Length: 544
Image (cartoon, rainbow, N blue to C red; front, side, top):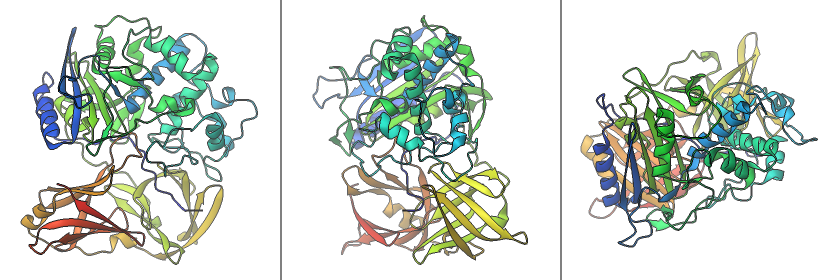
């Protein structure tokens, strides 16, 4: 078994700088789109501006590379995780029709004889699935993330039931916020079973058609954008029915604008439930809040309802402010993620990293084998665990010294003698592995950084390509060098992490046991970078 396997599927929830209050500043979005198009990171984009009953859509670039294929209001892009908004609307419609309740459980909805890796999974409610509080990890434990070209293809009902038979085995099941494609995909699956027609047919009949969204569906039409990754066409992701509810829809900027107008009271629809119920905040969601349908940020103290998405070659975001009666939607073909700039246009200010109370007695380095250990420490105010050669993941307290990893199907149990932590147990894949505590400080926290000149950092900034679709973006923020690894196997953008200098050309991460070594040519120009991680070296050549 490979302990704590890296999962790259995630929802990008990053924020950027503040913008003034008032009507959304769509000029900044236009400027951003044009800059990204000029850089080659964006091939096509549609921008919807919603101002009450007024809906305006602008197109940029080309849908297929030809000069006369400019996107319009009806051009389709794969909208990825914005599909979850529609899945949650299907749940609300099922509740309004008295077919289900928000507190209905999986025990009532799974096929007869379905096996569960943890008996507590049977008690997961539909509302917990919708609000990402089910305790399920981001993706099923049996999803093949080695398939970066199309990771969700072929994940059918039998594999979903197999994943449930493995999930959270030998672990307590908590109730904490972790964005979960597994959870919402499962929600779509059980809603489709209860309807009888399957998820796709149920969504089209009960949500898409009543909302009169004629350019939203599961297959792209003739007026659809190509998926572009690394400046080249790639295959769009396919989804089997089992996880279709997590990210399979195609949609247009015009339809997303009409979705926003429905919430603002300016688009007639035939949905049975009251849309205002979808805006009721259920609780915290990391640095944000969450409803049954939307994530919630704040601008001038007022709620901003939003969701984003990303699949191979596509990025999307939609958001709105009821206090202004306004919103935006951006659909992109290419590598550019519009989430930050769209939220900034809606007036969302930066959010300080949240501080939570953590038990510092569990800090330390734990050794599972000669070449593999787990460090536990505080990072950006949160308690995290970082395995050798892998990213750091937040730990969620479950009680009695148990902590769940939300991103992966694993948990840690700290073992004490006379009140002092002596070891931990790693629960993963239905097995328990014990690791003694070998040091009170995680190895990743023991490295020492030096000071380097800002001009040295500036010379390292750029884009480095490991392989088609796998790139490292290096940037500078003040005196801090930042690195972001972009991969295909995700439903939204990867996070950016700071890296710290050992020397002018060698930098280390604190959130992962890895280093970047920059290479120069005879003239001193930076030409490549080598990623050292987990005993493996990967070289990326500079492309910008």
